[in-house]
Structures are given as C-alpha cells and as structure tokens.
Image (cartoon, rainbow, N blue to C red; front, side):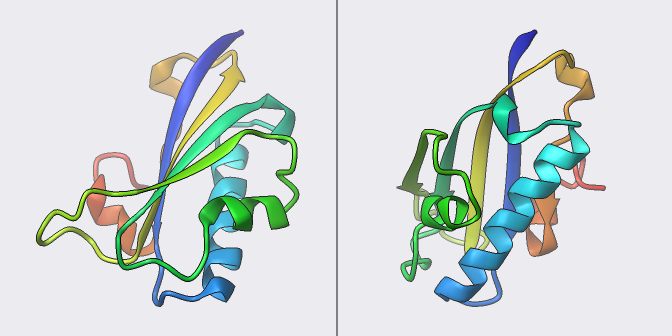
Length: 120
C-alpha cells in the first residue's frame, strides 16, 4: 500500500453555500469512485478556493457529507489575474495499491480547462 495524492477541482456557477454543499461532495465522491477507494482510504484533504468564494468552506461541505474524522484544511488560492473564477481545488492524500500513472484526477464542469490532459 502506498500514499498517493489525487487532484480534483470544480468550478461553481455562483458563490453560494448551497452549491458548495452539493458540488464539493459530488467531486469527492467521484474522486473516490474513479479511483476505487472508500472514505477509510483517505488520509487528509487540502482544499483551496479562489478569492471570490466567500460564502462557505469546502471542508464544511465535506463534513456535512460525512467526512467527520478525516483531517481537512482550507486555504485561498493566489489571486492571479485571469485565473478561473469560483473554483474549488482539492489535493487528497490516500492509501492505495495504485501507482501514480493509474490515479484518476478529477476536474468537473468549467474546471476541466485547468487540466484538459487529465479531464475525461
């Protein structure tokens, strides 16, 4: 078993707590499903948000979806001119038997343009 990092991102259509609470758990669920993982495989997750997302914490959305015993942290992305707006990113650390090349990184919605080489 190895420790691996999985990247994910989603662009929200608006800065709302409701959308954060629906989109973040959907992103996390897809990251687990596409990598054949369960919550118990997750070591920790670091979330970042663009400076225009202030209505809610993505970690709070994850906790509301049941991630209550996983260490989670939030931070604000660097405000780079022209960066994709309303974007939540996550770096999830997991235990898995997969090698790096087998890891599926998930980019949902408008966030697919961040890494078209990894988006399906």
